[in-house]
Image: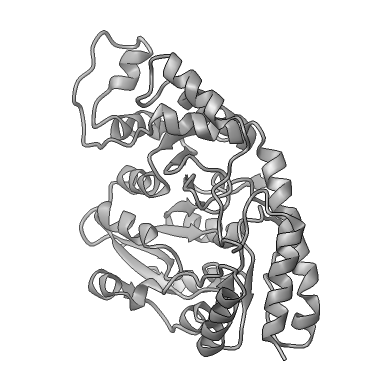
Length: 375
């Protein structure tokens, strides 16, 4: 069986976990957390990075920092994971969905402005498959309408847009280090902050509403409860696992890109014959090989393809069910404009196995099995 995903493991994770244990500090914000925060800030030229317990909690923090009021609205794509929308609800606003582009599966930047009302306060973009959204156009819209831009860059660690790191382009960026991501700590994430005016409150939110971070830095002689907050600090054991992978981040990135390119080249014949569609990466975007997808004719063909691949011993999966069609989406959200591509394209897309350390032999097996499906 070739699995769909294998959590990344570079070999030094256990060594660093043991170091964390020997330092007698396995709760949050210890040595490894500080190292990872600093590494991410330097590598991506980010003003401030705070590791969190998940990509979801990073999104939650971003929304809470926005201080939405009842009735405020936030624009986002419907083709995303539930966390993107639930974070908006946690922040007290209403998610408003717009359609996606069929080429990148990202939010259609040309549909955003029509969804803006006097209640709109923010735009959330999702860099699907590690391919950046059209950020220049989106940031221009946000500036003209005085809106906050939040990047759900859960899949886009190491991806860039015109040379700048995804997650650093908007007001807030949110990474995920879940076991399915390119770099993992099991469960984990990070919040990236552009404006330093938000740094102190972000630390307070992350520390259960206390000013504990200032106390540990020696800026105050005792700490106390000063605001709302939650426990968004990841364990040092988890972060030590991540630290090992950050030390070899470029190696992991190149390995995944090589697998992605192997798939892309191998499926050119089927794409040229019109039997499948391949991913599209704009020339000004550098992706990170987070996933490789194919688009089939329709839902029925995709279902048969997944069953065929399972019979060949290969794990393939579809991806998001559009949020506006989900029970919670119907209850809490609304879709602005016409759903031209979101549902149709989501029903055609299938993801192939992709993980760090995948051998070319296994990749070739995936390709061979896939090609057996097509007459």
